[in-house]
Image 1 (cartoon, rainbow, N blue to C red):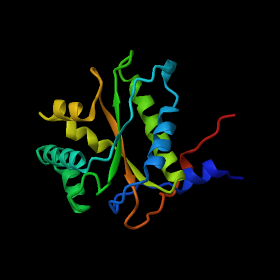
Image 2: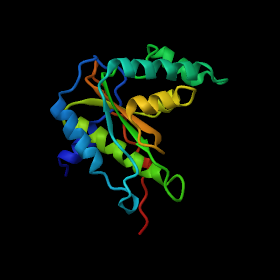
Image 3: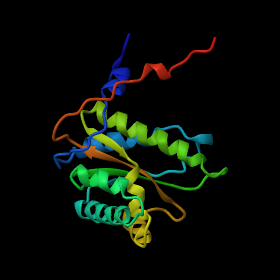
Image 4: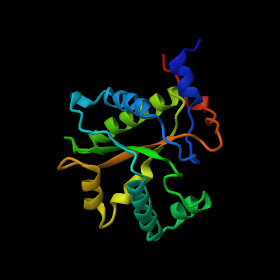
Amino acid sequence: MTNNTIETILKRYSCRDFTGRLPADEDLRLIAKAAVAAPSGSNRQLWRVIVVKNRRLISDMEGEGLRMLAAMPDKTMYERIMSRGGKLFYNAPCMMVIPLAKAVPPGAELFDCGIIAENIALAAASLGIDNVICGLTVFCFAGDRRDEFNNRLGFPPGYEIGLSVLLGFAQTPGKPHEPDTAKISFIE
């Protein structure tokens, strides 16, 4: 037996070839509202959601992220991105950036970040908006432009990049990965 929520989870996939067409503002507002409805440890809500539609800013961040990846001694990630067209953000016209404040104990905020990113991804998929949770955004903030991007994105003091979710419409619709049910066990 399935329902709309289960169907959305099972059909969602990670889009890596966006058309560049921007989702409607009404849909972006709904997705952002679903994002901040995410639970957080002790309801601390040590995150923000920043909806970025500014293509120049996205392009600047992408350029810096690629520069940082290219400068790494291990070129594996850079080469993978280049083999997929050289776009860190896959031509996505919009991203929701999730900055985080540090929790006590340190690292607890990362659990909340994952939950909010999944809320964004599933809310977008339920509205027919393709998406990918993008950990590569951290590379934009790994160099000497971190403070610039923190400022341009309006991060509150003490907040640092967590994740982003890229949003748009797929150039070529993809398929979800096949769930590996062998990874499930029951203990009775």
